[in-house]
Image 1: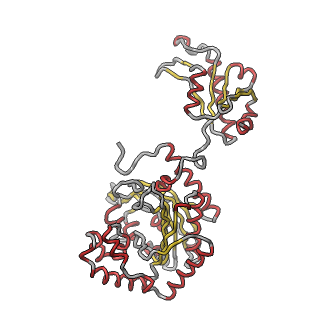
Image 2: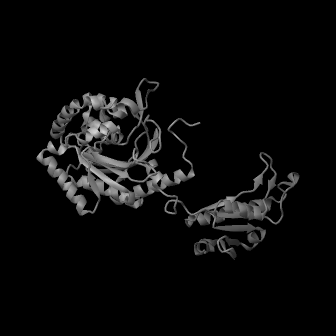
Image 3: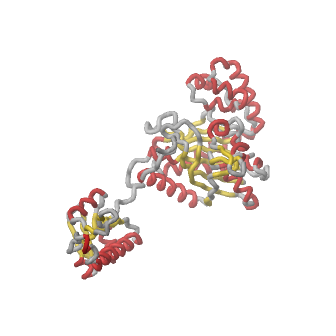
Length: 443
């Protein structure tokens, strides 16, 4: 039994994750981003000082433990803090701007449910060293292009907001505290706790009673500085010019304390996820995060991350990410070996059949065609070799959903050729191994 919230991934889920990563990494590299990999384990302080003492991640969700040196260690709950730590540790701040992408498992001790796991994969991108809102537009544009490339844009939309600069945010927090204090008796237990520590997080509450109160709360636009307003208007105008669909939501905040200015989410309307877990990608700006790790206070950052498992739920089992089923390679000796005492009397035929099959498999793989050899059946630890009948091997190929099979027998070895059978048209032809890729693609 696996640990709760950490399920095994079987082949179809692995194929979907591989496809998502392939689409995301190709898009990122085409747009000038470089890959970075940070450790799964980090000092717990990497996340506690960045995410915020009262954030849900730090207070409830992090996997923290002491190692044998009594150092406090954490499984990473998100990718941005580790990336910033890596930038500072490796001296990358001397060569800004920097565009990076990452992919890997994250860990949060949350209540497991569909679309919310304790171990989950994320793909993310980051831009460091650019304060101008053109970087915000690039990030949002890249995120939307990613969703389009996955063909999920039909059921998705972008929600966007601004948290303004530090001065604007302080004024807004004070107004929120005043408003929520008047409605304290109507707030949930969690929101009352947040009121004294981080009132912005109340805006993100999923409690039905809280949502009703949040709908009547002040709008941050009433407290934004002129520069913050103009910054947001630049982004909004740019998105309209790029035909990127979006909607401003005044209650949109992010779950980590390091965000400022632009924040956004991509949400899906698909019934496969449900409304409570419908965020499939989220991002924002964090201009003060690098400073927390000892970097320059003039090193702004912005980025986004997407949950691979949630994206996988939305993908259909279609040819776009499911590889073509393998061509089965069938070995058919004319002399069946069934007597255990004489199990290797025809070993010349046995190894020639297998080596011929391996040569065929190599030829196909070098041409980008998947193949799978149907091996001989064996009686456990016995050295007895039994070749299944041709009909059984063809049935096995059918179960693998192979569209065609390559048949290799003793005659084929002698004549240096193979038999290619097409299941769809129930036809077959004899050809040289060198001709196989072209013949298969012609079916």
